[in-house]
Length: 390
Image (cartoon, rainbow, N blue to C red; front, top):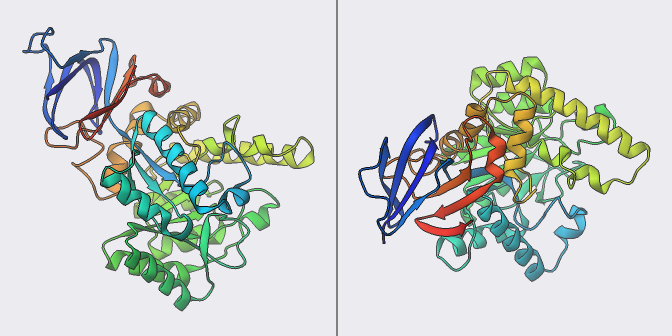
């Protein structure tokens, strides 16, 4: 059965349009995008007219995880849950993502290749959730103070190469390394590099040779310089990058996925630190991170967006970045067309165009002017099927 969706505004993945618009879905594809007064009567069956609303492509969360949720705290405990509980919790979180309008997500390192199995289960219709691109086991140094989700713990170049090969052989879509540790603590510790150019370069070269891409958990300092030099495709977080590093990323085309909401959200990281000196220091670090994010949004760095396992919170992430100075068009592009490009899926996802996958989101009001409208979900369509309405 065909489905026709009408609204007053549309974001097509790259640009906005205000005026009557009709999107016709047949099967799992978009078959018609009609701007202007509709030629088909409204009373026809299968027509959903939302009036003063915005039609967008399904959103893309470029940084999340399967079995952890920052809203509930204690990541280390979550990583040691029994397998069935771990995966069940992950499926619950992914469903929340889907119903928030995220129809595609990139998982950035998980336990025991569960992410690959869940990706395939969703693809085959066994489970519900966003279309997934996955990283298999996260890779970090034995000295690394962060990266709780990483389970491939290696230090030398050859061992890193073996981990990358194993992830690729298991079916990973991306490679994920942790070149920084924890964001909290003394600045010298936060900026300590745990992998250098040689370690990052072997991972990047193997990923690229296999037609894949690579991201790195990195806050700044020498690790950021190494990421840029090694050809890492995406720097995740980048919370303490310098102006020089932002400029270098812009010139090289290195993507930035800032994930600031995990620090600013009332249920985020800071919510799980008891009141006292440590909490006060964390608030100061959060404010420092927001200052860097503000500069990044005004730079030429290509932008992606992600929640870092604040499941269901991509609208909050976008609103936070808007409050920090991000232009609505740039943020909408980051969550749609930019993400499709970074994933190598341009024209397939992240677009409201004829022939693209019928992954669609409708929100109340004009999201072209205010991305906070993305929290008001009216309709989510994935592969032509309505997964949430009202």
